[in-house]
Length: 327
View 1 (cartoon, rainbow, N blue to C red):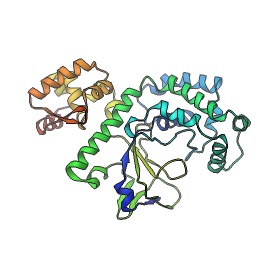
View 2 (spheres, one colour; view 1 turned 120 degrees about the horizontal axis):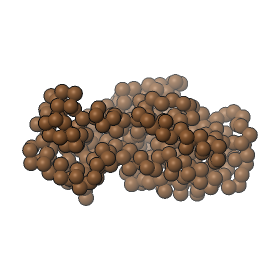
View 3 (cartoon, rainbow, N blue to C red; view 1 turned 180 degrees about the horizontal axis):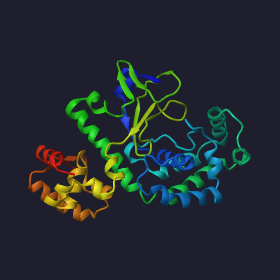
View 4 (tube, rainbow, N blue to C red; view 1 turned 60 degrees about the vertical axis):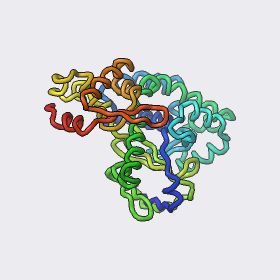
């Protein structure tokens, strides 16, 4: 079990972020290990051929050797520095700017073992940083880029939900359901997923909370160099994305108000913008806007402005309608 001791300044400086290359690295780990749990239906079958090509034609196999089952160097998944605005381009730029000697030292510390010959050759290359970034960029384009808008929308919706909860009910209420294995205690957090008992003190510069799609059904933490103290947890709402469309829409509700409106209402368990709903559900933005207007006129959703965006959420009547619908 990991016990992360956080002082008042750490909690006061808590913030949310999205980590694109952490998501890619988590997907690569699943594909490399052959584990398909946690992937949407058909994803593994769709991605395995491209993954095999990447292993054959790029440095991907060598790069995957630079980590263990439980940890890896920050060169494969840099810490997000721009919060919810973090993009994969930011991550790749961070890797390209890394000192190769720093990467080598971190890899040796993380792995603690002899590496395969192709990995040793990669580490010895003066262009190490650029080769890692180039390979991850190709992997991103072939494996994740097409699906990222929908996945990012899931993570953003999680953060908006928790921000709303913080405003309404406070920090503990908003974060108590991050993961069943995560417990908040008086002086910090305890994460049961760690095999080795460890106590780590916060650095006083805040704790980073990162919603993730591919970490599901587990949770993770970054406590080493290169990252602030970080808790990575499964984003809310991934079940909607992972389900087949017929499973994501309550049957009787779909017959009553139409499948698209039912899907939108079911997805609004957390506040979402029109564009986020469109990306998550694979619908046209204009069509989602029209459906939301109808649902709002019927008293099933309402809307609030958050910064420059308008977020929709179910009303109590909408909640009751979804809860009572027959599957």
